[in-house]
Amino acid sequence: MHKIGLFYGTYTGITSMVAKKIADELGAENVDLHNICNDGEAMQNYQYLIIGTSTWSIGELQEDWDHFMPKLQTMDFTGKTVALFGTGDQVGYPDTFLDGMGMLYETFQYRGAKFVGFWPTTGYDFTSPLPLLDHDHFVGLAIDEDNQSELTDERIKEWCKLIRPAFNL
Ligand SMILES: Cc1cc2nc3c(=O)[nH]c(=O)nc-3n(C[C@H](O)[C@H](O)[C@H](O)COP(=O)(O)O)c2cc1C
Image (cartoon, rainbow, N blue to C red; front, side, top):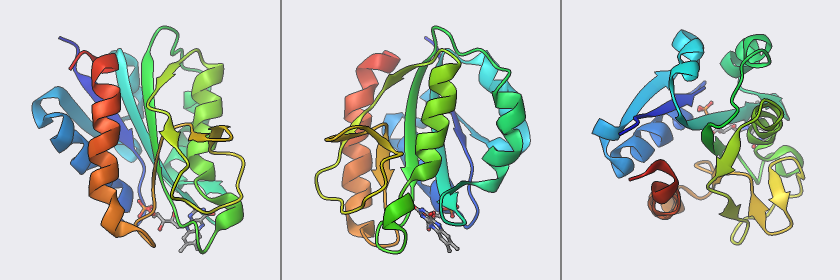
């Protein structure tokens, strides 16, 4: 069985907290957790990837992902299965809600990744187009701990159910 590599970037710890919850939900033995500030190049070792980021500075990718971007833009993800998740604040930053997740989607897509885990936009209120796959779906799981923390655990649970088959779990 292939292990899943979960790579996240975080500033205040929210995205790492969500990453740990996702790993627990999928079974900690099935997931290797990596902070992108330490060992991003290890992404190349995995067939199955989960990628998480927050958004900062009104529409900017989380800092450690931003630093890793030049390297990421040289990596090949052809044939790899990728599920994305993002954390953000839809009330404070509706125009740039989860833009970081949208930026990573574009980069991984350009580098050949195959995506799973699109998530419905029902129950969110925002205007940013960047994290959207289509009118009704985000490109990955959308978490808003700033305003909807009571929904986080259930969202993670449902999303993990959705991605399990694609990761052979
Ligand atoms: C100054 C500032 C700017 C932010 N900009 C955005 C933004 O543009 N879009 C968004 O969705 N969230 C934005 N956020 C909210 C954070 O992304 C959110 O709190 C996130 O969960 C933080 O995760 P982290 O601690 O893992 O980095 C911003 C927060 C602050 C304080």
